[in-house]
Length: 209
Ligand code: PRP
Ligand code: URA
Image (cartoon, rainbow, N blue to C red; front, side, top):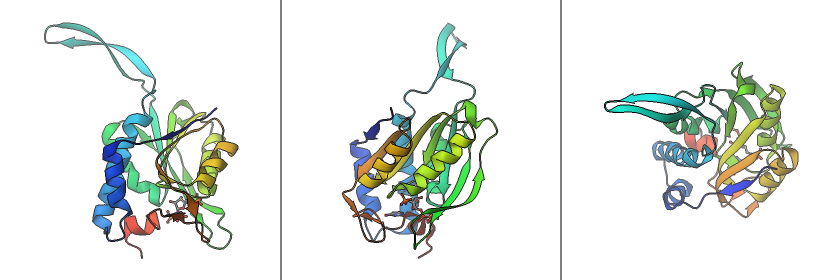
């Protein structure tokens, strides 16, 4: 059964306060998303599989551990998930990166797929889906379904801000997936934006509005 993990680390909370502000401009917004993703990634990867290695130090042989060879695949959900990639790769530079393109149809609010490219060995990896926003959960649930169709079984979801309907949908559709988020906001508005949230994450990251 998947679990919901909510971060309360002071550094993450501080950066989310800055991120939410309507005066925060694209450059700072982008840097904050990347930094928050890096801090979250530290905890999300706590249980990654390790392999035993022998390391020759200047004074002897150490029995040590390193990440297993086929370790992580990060999958940002386009567009906004792209903003989290640099931060997580700074912690695990050997990870592979898949991409899933989805946007919410403004009328139906249903996710529409336009791109999916995952590493061929995705089924052997721990997959971490990246998206700053989990609102209705439609995009996250669809993204996880695509990844499962490619054979992946160990999947985690990493969001910066989530709302209860999104968490409920992912838990219901994918009870095996752990969800990690840094804030849970109370509600969605009539356009399914998270309130208070931070607005449209993609537009704020890429300066498109
Ligand atoms: C945003 C966000 C999520 C989705 C969340 O993307 O990045 O993918 O909405 O909403 P949901 O939980 O209700 O599905 P958006 O559709 O705005 O696309 P964009 O990243 O290309 O702007
Ligand atoms: N997508 C966003 O970018 N923001 C929201 O609040 C909800 C969905």
